[in-house]
Image (cartoon, rainbow, N blue to C red; front, side, top):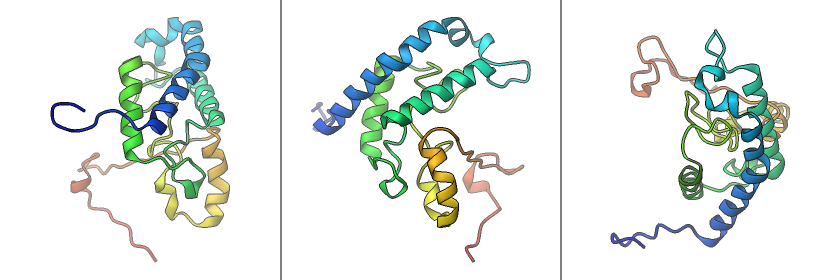
Length: 178
């Protein structure tokens, strides 16, 4: 506990997950970082002339995402009804704090940064299977979910209008369920 009386230590179950996650990173991801240090640490080598991630960087991130999925970390926060582990926001906060405290920002294969908003290690609502999928029809879920859960495919979440950008309160478009 800190002086505010709030317990800032993760529960034992979450601590074990964090420890396992770090072992995975040390055995699977850190060696890749070392092997590819020249392109991963130099921001001028991350992106091509069209300002997209270079093919080599994308391949590394895809590999890490698939390995993370095989190990069960990629889908750790995905709802159980979609095939994930179903850990909630408290576990997410503890894991992300620990991840950033240990590895820092901008590690292209580990943490967001260097122009990247997501980590290939953990599925987020932006690109991985998430609660966004809960409302899909079952026949679409059957087609989409296996690819997303395995890390073989990603999805894209976009939120924008010409006058609003990503300011959700300024959006004028809305959906009606029929």
